[in-house]
Amino acid sequence: MARLRRLAIAGWPHHVVQRSLDARTVFADEIDRREILAALHEGAALLKISIHAYVLLDSEWQLLVTPPEPEALGRLMQIVGRRYGASHNRRHGRVGALWEGRFRATVVDHGADTLECVRFIEQAPVRTGLVLAPKLWRWSSAPGHLGQSRDALLTETEAFWALGNTPFERETRWAQLLEEALPEDRVTVRSRSVETGWPSGSGSFLAQIARLTDRPLAPRPRGRPRSA
Image 1: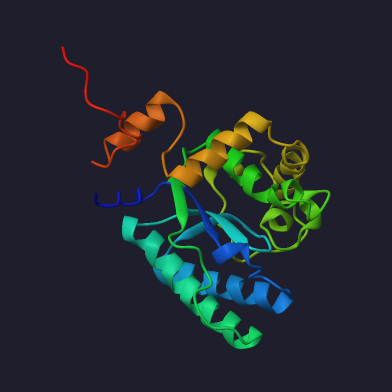
Image 2: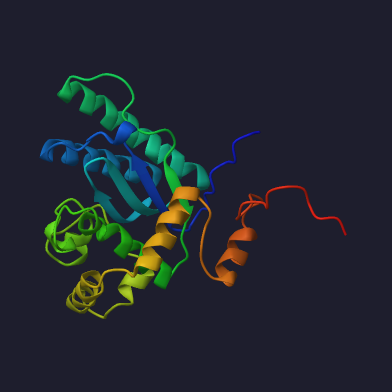
């Protein structure tokens, strides 16, 4: 059976996860992390992809990005993955594949769903026990969203701009949202959606996406169709 192609829609946010092979540490130090962020910045600029959120963990990285065309998403991950993989192997004296197969990705609705996905990404270091608060993890988009630093990687979504009329208002509101952990059921939904590639959301969101692709948006029922 042919492998189902990845769902990618131009102009829509996509939650992306790339993990290392065998859960190996791929970001061992500050040099590693700066190297992949530089590759990400270069690739996104080349392909005109907007980056709305990101996080670097020890053995994976996550993004929320909007590609201008469907093919750009895969090209970005290929450019960044190859450049960083070669650099990492040279620095650490290793050979072979760095990444676990294909990256995972799912389309995300605009508005509140986009903000929830950004929270999911920026709260990942807390869920994995790296820090006690998202603002304490340097290697994510959280410091930029909170006004702790200027992050040239980021392009804010309309939903983020709507949080306030001034940078201070937006940063204050985002700090409040980020301090509140996502409910477990929402973490489960976000995790399952990006793992499987099946989008989750309202009926209107799924209907919009269905008009933009001929790819199935949910797995087909198993077994033979029921007879009439």
